[in-house]
Image 1 (cartoon, rainbow, N blue to C red):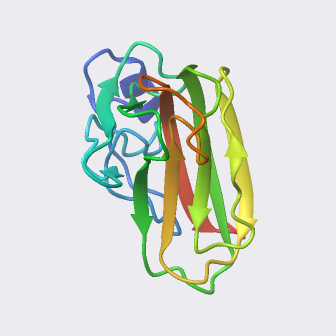
Image 2: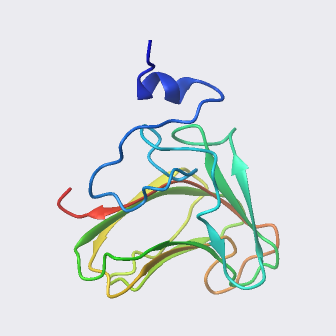
Length: 171
């Protein structure tokens, strides 16, 4: 008998699979995908600025929603960041939704590049959902700065991200 996505989401070692929302741009099964649809333990769609100044790892004990989160740790305490790329949505009114929290430090922030507004905000030590609408002017980059975009943090500052959703605003 097939398991429902809700049952699968509660199983310890299972990855979750279904068909993502038709307007969802984050369709690669990954740690920050929809926890009831295509979440997996994949973290390869998160890239780093510079010479890998952010350590990326899978988190499965402090996850907010779903089975996984990605843990981003600042190696240098500067303005380094990890990011996801969303091409092909330039000019479309888009809703961007993230769930995140800072686990070490107090200066973490995120920023959406090539959007207006940028949606940038500080990341707190509680799981928080941040949703905003924007009209991208180019390829969208979702950046997470574990030590802050101004470089005011310290080596070891860390952020967990459990969800990134990018889709048409009317969806």
